[in-house]
Image (cartoon, rainbow, N blue to C red; front, side, top):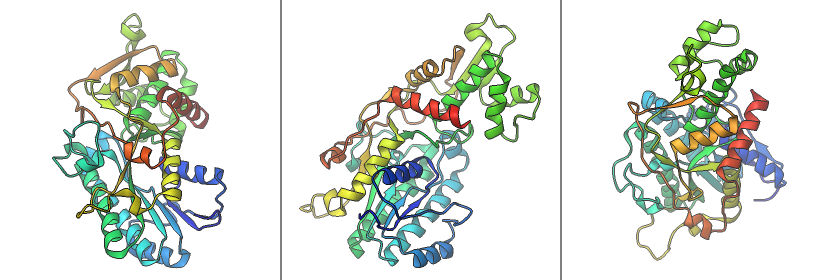
Length: 368
């Protein structure tokens, strides 16, 4: 890419897209195309076709997607498969039709089988059954990988798919119904800390910016506590009980292992791929069948949900109790990526987990 190349970032206000935009600006790139959802509905085939025909981007980062945690994935199954297929089909096809020089498609490690050998290598794709709760989302992402791969093979495009591990960072989703585990735990314990300190100013400030199902800073204390109880944040009248009367519920046993990557590290990896790696670099040309050309992006380190919760508790300064509800689903027990392919292509992460959580909570406190 040249510094003045026309770069379209789909999803530029989200967790990944905003980090990519920031990274590109820091590296001196200047010519960006961005549209909000209100300005351009990426599910609208005609609107996307008109936009690409008019703007003619040179490079495309496809970071737009409908995403969520285990609750959202399992509840809105039709939305997750339809919305994601629509978005990626429109952008990838229009990138081909309008001569985009290179496209980067953002996938997810949920594409791998539920009981995948660990760590997960690119070659394990489509070797077994997917995890049930996020199967529609995973199928959409697999389709995106194969669409990039197939267009490259048929049309000689340069579309590359990358599969990040669990991401976290600035501009994450803190909606308690739809967020992933790490931002959800940060917000729950932030609220829990406010409650244990009887700090209603902080709690109402939080709800003013991020209402929970219509409950905001204007509601009564009783209404707020009732809604928080639905999301596992409870306060007992008995302050002598475990955790000083405060408890934060966490879905599952706490035993599943997860890998986490700071979103700005992810963005740096994406820009590295766009600057330095082409489709021809992602596979062995001596193989008769070209497949699994996608690239994993991760740290190669994993931590249990229980350990994660205690790190977040320490960073936030929440002193209440943690309740692991084993009646709720755990999801996949392990999801550790093998990122040796990307390391061989010249990139490695920088930010360790506890440092990243500290940065993320600092950002949250300034923004909320």
